[in-house]
Image (cartoon, rainbow, N blue to C red; front, side):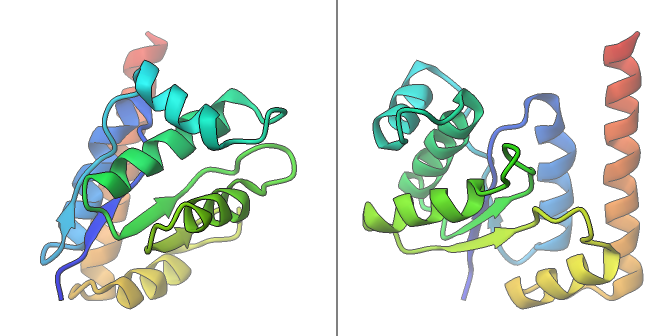
Length: 152
């Protein structure tokens, strides 16, 4: 069964992340979240606790937009605030809103290539570990190039 995979909008990092996911999950559909707009913030703010930070609201708004666009697998790759409860709180909010989805949490700083590969296999990558690693390293290189260009 084909899945539709999405992730929060991450500025210029969206390009290598989308490319990575499309290469790893070729048989599935990958849709990045729409660019962050006023609507994104309104959706996230409406469903967020009052005291939560703005990045939480942006990410939640992105997830709502992605789910409304047909996503059924969401990838949360950031650490979130100091307590790192983004994923747990956002998942509960989205489930309370009636969405049915799988949330892949990559929040731990200890997620290495073998753990990422195991997660990717569960989602449904047909790639060997060597090919998977090639695409991960390619994405990391792209991110470094983006950082260098932005720093310049």
